[in-house]
Length: 298
Image 1 (cartoon, one colour):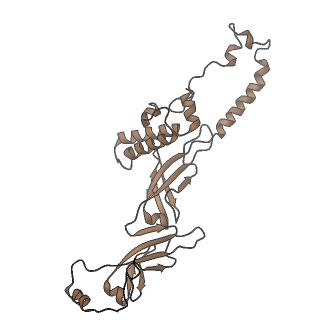
Image 2 (cartoon, rainbow, N blue to C red; image 1 turned 180 degrees about the horizontal axis):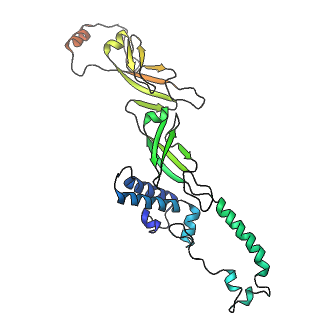
Image 3 (cartoon, rainbow, N blue to C red; image 1 turned 90 degrees about the vertical axis):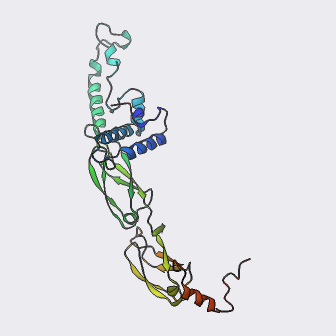
């Protein structure tokens, strides 16, 4: 495997944030879902993911930089240790006892067992992903399928009311552990796409609703979209542009099972081209003498 720093295009002094940004950039360019059938892109994605797995783990990065493990996380050939100097014809007398290593035999067995147990217990590393979901799946809940670096696909359940930056944890879907250790987790950070009609404010949904002059003056029932489906909204008579109506319980689900509201802001919209009849009426309408919409202006 190539040097992980070279794969991600960062220096050995790069910060954890620099490494994360470099990985995200590389993953976006080479992800298999964005390059179907491109084996080179798939290979680059796997290389980048493996490099990030090593460098994002501070302990693995330290050991790699120290030459203790290679780019694949495997142990390098060991150096000489105490035992190498304590026996044989060239034994160093500083390390030598009359019993050689007989007095350490039991201790070695115990230590070997302890290290073996520690290896089995050591947990695999976590894998980090960023997933873009559509607005309605975030507020109402949904499912998404993602492809992990090793080619596995997993289905993710998006809980109702999910927010931008929320992290979902998939237990046991991360990096495999050495020997019999527990696998790490996959951490999925959500990015919520904007919606052409709805805006979220906490647990409330805001919608701007265009209405005609007739609907504003005479009142009407207007079909109005919500995140749960369309409803008929009663627009009161003599409604001004900018007035806000509330649809209770039509917002985002809270953790206690209740729902926020939908706030509907009315927007008076005239015909796209001049209407002679409407213009004639406006010119002939005297209005109320006390009607001055800008009377409080300075």
